[in-house]
Image (cartoon, rainbow, N blue to C red):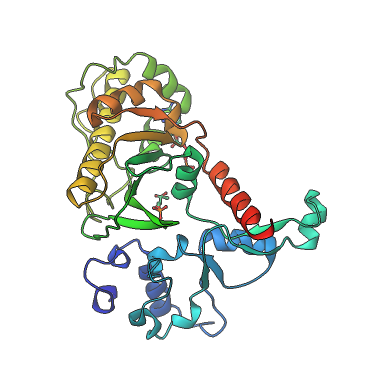
Length: 320
Ligand SMILES: Nc1ncnc2c1ncn2[C@@H]1O[C@H](COP(=O)(O)OP(=O)(O)O)[C@@H](O)[C@H]1O
Ligand SMILES: O=C(CO)[C@H](O)[C@H](O)COP(=O)(O)O
């Protein structure tokens, strides 16, 4: 359905895209189409704060089909019956309005507190890391593994789950794999992760070859909704098992950066790490060996810090 209206290999062709979800909803629900609007999670959260419907940012809107290069929805999307559900789009960090009075009073915010448009979680993590030059990258090791590489050129190829977000006048090229912390959490507690990791010698390659996924389906660097998790054979020693899983996730990350290079992105030179997995020093060393690049923990590993920086920039730009 999406493939019949969108250009070949467009990001919206990925089965997890916002546009696929919107069309699936449009075709399966027969009530309330008249009053419905499309909100991304971030739009909904911001709406609770400012109370204005139908506003988003061009990062969140990418996967519904918004073109951040022309700063507009493409004509193939605007000719669809559900196009009036699409929110208006502003640059990330643009002031939308003052915070609602009841919320302001409840939480003690100042009277001039302004709410700005946001961005996606892994872009916020990139901003938190403070990387500004092409070739610098951030891998977010949260529930999933999201890769963002600052590049001078834009790349998009849904066959591999690769897309580019606009970051001012540059591009954040990358994608998100379903591997990452969620699969670790299915097998180990956070305490076990910390203790077992200490038993791993990161300079020694693990011979175990897995494809750790929490469920069926992968998005990037291979887009395959039917891919099965591969987590066997399980050795008796848990530290060996964890070593094999961390090393296998590192191989997926290395494949991701290699793919971006092959597709023509600026070559990665240095990788910062954000998210819950960033605290694992052994994993950072394993990744450094497998990627063949300098890898370090970002100074700020919380995406929320990047979102706050974005709001600060927006307010300074518009009110000073
Ligand atoms: N020591 C550790 N080593 C590797 N991963 C860890 C460690 N501690 C926690 N994690 C993983 O970090 C993930 C949580 O990170 P977080 O950035 O909060 O995720 P989310 O994407 O859900 O916001 C969990 O899925 C957990 O498996
Ligand atoms: O898997 C994720 C959340 O579950 C990723 O963080 C997300 O898909 C990445 O999206 P984007 O590249 O648009 O920031």
